[in-house]
Length: 152
Image (cartoon, rainbow, N blue to C red; front, top):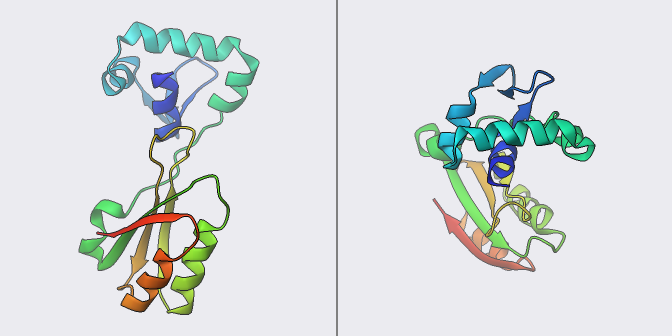
């Protein structure tokens, strides 16, 4: 399961040849095993299981990386990052926050939401162009189901 979680997290897929790929870049069994903290034979076994199981194969041969995250370089680009913790099973968090930001003229450059089934403490991370006004921050904190808001 840890191998599959890492595959989904990074957008690693199993190709028709049974090898692992991120986009068109091949990822070695050893590199994936090292990243997950398992023996490479576990990774190889996972590839075989995926190929034999129609349901797994349908999903894990089509996974793609979601793109480059700007979170760690936001400050160098003049952007601000806010991290929102909320009940991931209640609707309206993303629309509530982004609506408030839009009304205050804040441009969202990137939105990254953790999958609650794959991440123990899922968060919504927004990379914002410019700075969030204090009054917008107060309104964002009042969005239903938001438990915390952190600015980085």
